[in-house]
Image (cartoon, rainbow, N blue to C red; front, side, top):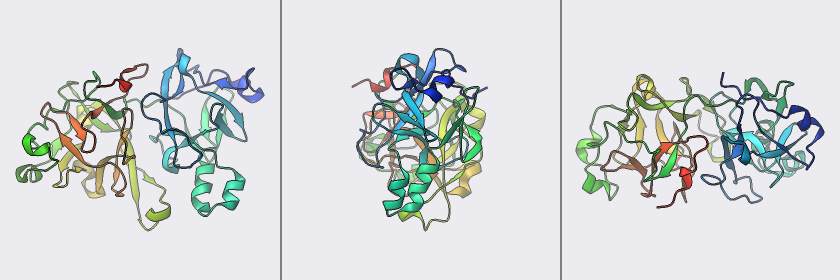
Length: 319
């Protein structure tokens, strides 16, 4: 029921009248695949470090693409749809990133990475509008059944207020980003919400997938990661808090050495997604608990953990 199907399939294969075809959905009328322009994209530059997350939103914001050589290419900047972190497992993010061509692979220094970026940008569009990874046809584009966990402005109505975290930190010390000795020794804490009764923070899939490791992470035997969502409290994660302000995943995942993190280490803005995964040291993974039960990244106290709500404009609210 969460599978996405495109509306204008025939037009994709012949090209739109204006050069691009909107990614409107027949499976979810009135909605489309959109770029998260206002709340979480990285400014496009000709670099493989640039990317922008995509989501399901209103049709008036639909991405317009051309479908060529197995890739869905945004007509505005030439970015292509691809699987985040070259991960082909279900539950992974979809994003826009610079296109990697065969010429880039031939000339590039890290061919393993470039090949993976290329392969995880190849999609097959079926006659009914479903979109599959060409190199992993058992996985298709879908809508996450849980609202994604993202950073939102501190005053956003979509912020998460946690039920059990008010006493995790001494709030006077927390302003300086220091964990109290008592907090560091606390038992597992359930990520249950008082702002959303009966709900909590859950992984979007129960089995945490391993993802590809390239470059400086190649020596790591296993890198795991998965997106988070708002789900029933019965499936909520349990965590602990370390003395260096990391939120460490406990409970059934305690042996996986996972932490809460955001992929981007600097210049955090509303809309950036949060995950749990292996701590690779280059992401935002240190947090502080506010006196109202919200959680902020240590480097941006104007933001708190919250949720993505399709069609909402509140992610980009200013303080």
